[in-house]
Length: 255
Length: 304
Picture 1 (cartoon, rainbow over the protein chains, first blue to last red):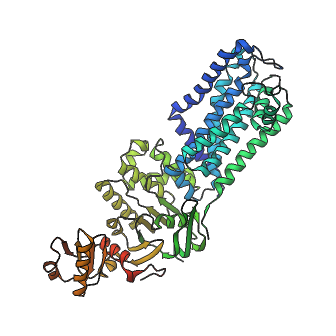
Picture 2 (cartoon, one colour):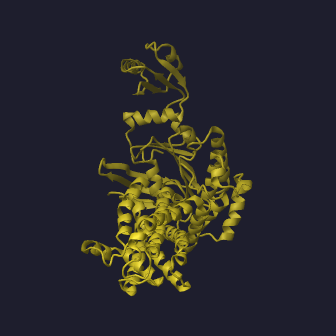
Picture 3 (spheres, rainbow over the protein chains, first blue to last red):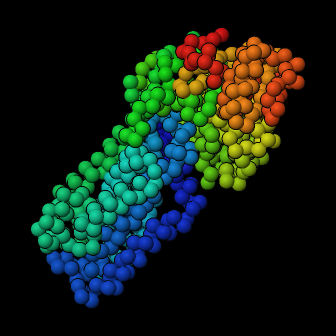
């Protein structure tokens, strides 16, 4: 059994589920857009354009808002694992001959597809903010967001498998992901930030995915795009590896 | 080779709060082409045993020999393992894919199983639109899609009303008559265990009695005496009285059960407030008796 048929079926199942509960998709897009309106409405007059960048604060923060959209969608995808494992169809999947990695891959692929559709809606506001986007630019930005989505869903799935309760999962994810997002240059350029913050930003993989996305969209960045893409892709691979490894482990009794 | 063959399986759960807890203690089981009920209270080890057989828990020691099981094993859980937002058909297609069945083959099986289980006209309804009984039948259909040779049922009628239970059992009996299956059912409901060919009573992760429902009941004689009392003193008094009349018995929670009872005992009990019944033993009586009987300490050996 190669697991592809199971992966496809479980992915399709996830997508059907989402189309039948559109409120979840609307919530994932609306929250980042509201945060963006708050930031831009509150700070654009005092900040104007971003130093070392050709973008206004409104345009500069859009990749960050797209990644926030992806982050929310990724959290939803990971949480669904906990529910499915206890009450849903995953119990049948776990006792079936389908390889465990098919469960992880279906969650990652379906979650990423949904996250990217939502993020694309956010990205399409850029032309209205003075940034002209090309098809290649959009493809590059989507690829960067895909790296975030794959990595965060993978991370979330591994955590959801270990934490085993939605309350615990929320707590850990909020403590981990929100600081990661805030220190990644999502809403301010980290290149000129204070020394300690810059160090945190440099070891934060989201900083590099944001750099890769901005570079694809033709915005000036303070870091090398090649390095940014390398780290972004490595982050995604890490997410897949962590999720498949964690979910593939069978519960082992003490001897 | 048997469909299920376990030898000296030991499973120990460990938590920081409670330390080690033995869920299965050198547990052995052999079953083939029969319906076997695992009867025991909550925490006896029933679900753990099903998890071991379905290979979602790796035992700490012992050998597990279920060569065909992973490919053709199915589990019906306490609540349906179905996606409520998907239709019955969509859920069954997922079940087929999980067993690597081509879509055409799954579609053929769906039509035939749905017709058999009376779901043909509900295939395109979302699970959340179905009653509890219909959802349970849809879950049984999900389990039957791979044509399993081993079917595990984990308290399968939990939450169902009397009619839905009856229909579930009729459906399962009908399916068993058609397919050659080994069915293992965990339950704490003795009436459900009556459906089985063989009953394995377990406590603290070990076998305390094993036999057909009829054999188990006859092991307590044609009639038992069941005396319900209201306090410890009365319980002790009734116990002494049965001993004086040479009736082997057990006492538990202000209840005294004696076996091979003479009907005349009903009129001679010295405890006036006692509620006495003399009747053929039920599986509930058998379980209560052997679970409390000091002469029936848990054993790893099969008793038949």
